[in-house]
Length: 319
Image 1 (cartoon, helix red, strand yellow):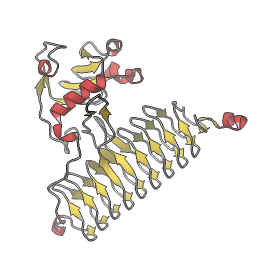
Image 2: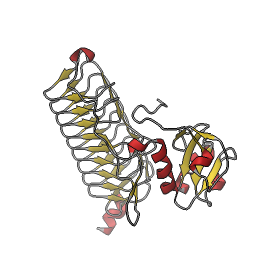
Image 3: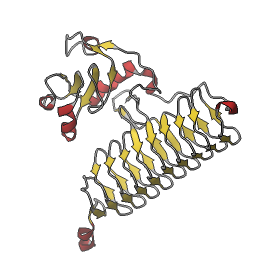
Image 4: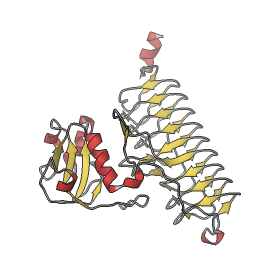
């Protein structure tokens, strides 16, 4: 699904119009995408050595980056070197997608026309936006709002008082009462007089057989997507920030928090009230004890505990 179905682009733009001080190239930029998703005529960004492998292989025609990182880009990719990559990215993203800076109310919301949703059961006071699709044998609880263009698969249970926007949901998914899916993440550039919001143009993807507990918040991606893999279960009051990617068959206990852009492998278990810092890579079959604070990458088949989280045997020696 390459086309952005949730936000309408104002592009294309000429590169020298986007960056008049940095380049005189008159090439056309059609969209903004992550390093691994970008194609020819797309603009991307590269702000951390952690993403070197993606940078080396990117197909983007242009990349916003820093002087010390441009050497990792292919020769086919024009480097736009700046002091603050995220600030310049935010300004460009605002030109392409000005309506993604704030979550504006969906003016297309109406009571569902049941003839358009055969085999779907709706509770009281449900509101549905235009172009929403819901598969057969799904149920939607009372006082739930499903905003425009959201896709929901078959045999899903969507509880009461839920908000879903900017999301693609698979089959056999359960979302319990009070959860918020697809809202804008906590992204801005701190400035002296007025903070500059970073548009979030990504979406949330919930794959088949996922369960989301009550009162969870799953933020949509900023440029990429926030994703939860098949058969992963979240307990109540879990928060996932923008761009987090969780693999398959993971179990996440209550009140766990994920900072932005961290990636979890398959079969990861996390105890309650643990915190995962941003831009980390958590391997497969990892176990994280309750109340732990994860601030470094964790390799496959590792059990950690404590703050900062350390291998379990090391934790026992210290305590």
